[in-house]
Each structure stands twice: as C-alpha cells, then as structure tokens.
Amino acid sequence: MLYEAAVQSPKWQVEYLPQFHRLWLGKKPLRFREDFCGSGLVSCEWVKISPKHEAWGLDLSAECIRYAREVNQSVLSRSAQARLRFKEQDVLSARGGSFDWIGAFNYSYFVFHDRKTLLRYFKNAYHSLAPRGSLFLEIAGGPGFIQPDTTRKKVQVPGIGKVTQIWEQHGMDPITQVADYSIHFQLPDGKWMNDAFVYHWRIWSPREVRELLEEAGFQETYVLLEQTDARGKGLGELAVQEEADLTPTWVGYIVGLKKPA
Image (cartoon, rainbow, N blue to C red; front, side, top):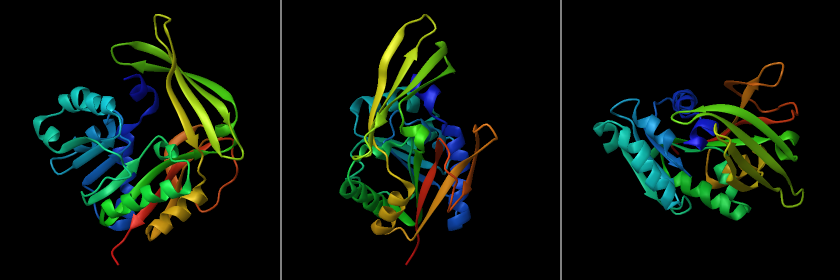
C-alpha cells in the first residue's frame, strides 16, 4: 500500500499510454500483460475499463502475487476478476497470451544486468505479443538519477494518513553501470521503516535499449520523454523525441512495436 501510494500512477498509465499504441498501430489494445507486476495495481485498473479488457500480471514473488490476488483483485467486480490472471512466473520464460501490449514499469527490467539476459527478455516479450503489439518500458536517467542523493515527499496513504517517503540514491559504479537505491518511509506516528524497498539496477541507456529491441525483432522503436515546466517538474505528458538536451534527471518510456510481416 505504501509503495502504491508513493510510486505508482496506474490510472494515468492505463488511460494515457494506450493512446500511443492506437496512434502507431491503428488498433485499440484490449489484452495487457504487466511484467514484474508486484501488487498488480496496473492490471486491476486495466480490467476496470470495460468488459472487453483483459490482463495478466506476472511476478517471481509469491508474496506479491498473493497480495495482488487477496488485496487488489478481490475488491474488483466479479466480471473484472474473471478477466484478470496473476501468475507467479519468470518473465524470461513466460509464453502464450498473444497480448496487445506489455508493460514493464518502475524501471523493473533494470534488474537484468547483462546484455544477453535483457535481450532474452525482449525476445520473449516479442513472441508474447499479437501481430500488432507494443512493449512499453519505463526508463530514467541523467546525472541526477545516478549520483548520491536523498529526496523526501509527503504522500497521503488511505487508512494510514500522511506518510513521508524518502528516496535514497547510493551512487553508480561507472564501470558496471550498476547503482543501488532505497525507499524508506516515516509513518504518521513517527515510526521509521528503513530500506522498505531496495534496488540493485543496471542503468540502461535509451540507445542500448533500442538496439536490443531491434535485435529482438521489434520493427520500430520510439522514445517518449516526459515534458517538464521551467522548474524541471514533470507535467505528466509525453512527447516523441529523437534528440534531447541533457537535464539533471529525465524520465520516460522506450516503446518497441511489433508489426505484421
């Protein structure tokens, strides 16, 4: 619940991102797979859209899948629950489904540190997509994303109150391109949750990701960068860009398109 309130934007993702899929592929996506799904909140939001929307959520963690089923799926309508499947499964070996689009959010594929493994994941995703399908990969970078730093923000968590979230960056090894991150929380009663979530990520660049997507078979790739105001604050709007100015921190998506031969 703390992670969902502090980090995720599921309603925005299911409403906004498919617009690009429809623009590029000329069809409305209905079948969705959420890779590294965690609590499955994005999948739950997807099946709530209409009786035609279906979703699968995949994660290696039995605890996450149990939470997704018992907490988030259980409160959906009976119809929505029937169109949603959560599976304890490795995204590297998942098969079947013929999905319209697949999403890997919150930089989750950064857990793959070597080229061979990331390419394997992209090939699997490609073969799991329908003939006109898309893969959305959330990505971030810039000097401000890899240097040691700590930021705080207040988030309102249902049933708990106003919580302080602390995002800590421990710095990146310039040779391995691997960096460590932590999320801590301070609850309204002052209780401190240290290292509630920790990450050991390879910081992949957009160019590396696009080259691997093309090698995996994706016929087209795009970079969607979040637009910012004069102060550098994200506006929640994405734009296709082939070049960009270097900013302290940038966020966006790399999209791979599968098209009929």
